[in-house]
Amino acid sequence: MHWTSPAHLIVLTHRGRTARTRITPEGGRLHDIRDRPGTVSFVPANLPRRAIYEQADLRYSALWIHPNAGALADAPAVENALINAQEPALASLIDSLRLDLAAGCMPDDGYVEQLVSVILRRIAAADRTGAPRAVRDAHASLSATVLKRIEAYVEAHLRDAISLSELAGVAGLAPDSFARRFKATTGLAPYAFVLQQRMARAETMLARSGEPIGVIAARLGFSSQSHFTATFRRHLDTTPQAYRRAFS
Image: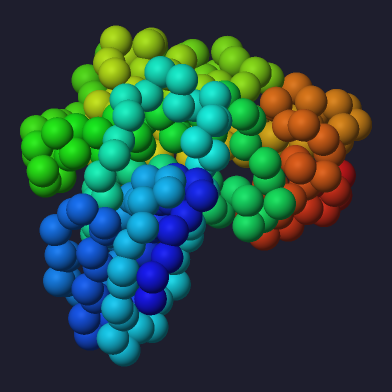
């Protein structure tokens, strides 16, 4: 298969595998590998490539980034392809975005732009070394003090669009390092943690107040009542209305 994408392409493999995958980007080396779950690949826009997939049975997410997207303004340029890199933190972030979109929930533009910027910075580091960057602090934890600051910040800003860069600033870390450390400490991607806190507050408000559900949705930073309802149902397997009735 010969193929050229007009946009930057990032692919996360979720399930399945191939017996063999051979990918040759134009001007690059041959990648003779097997696709496996949890790997991340990147192909720059307008880079021709040739690919052969043997016995492919894959489920994956693809993130397309326009070459002129705002998220690229401060991101380093990446000219080479990155194929099947083991990047657990990035895989978690991309997967959380996929789950939100699948549930009909659109994350704010700032979060998506920051996510794309973090991804491209890590890919650029791998591009400079010719291999995926060794992540020295991949399993380092955040201190209890820093974690409390993050929790307090999220609690105070549930109504706002909380970006990854904001949380990283509270922790005093670069966004990609913060995302890795937060995941290692809590088991959640930062955005998933923010959603978890919003859902916990929603449960309290639904059980203890008589405020309209639309008002609760707005106070928790959701763009609409339908967005809030879809997210609540996905997390708690019931609707806000049904949850409230259980306490009436």
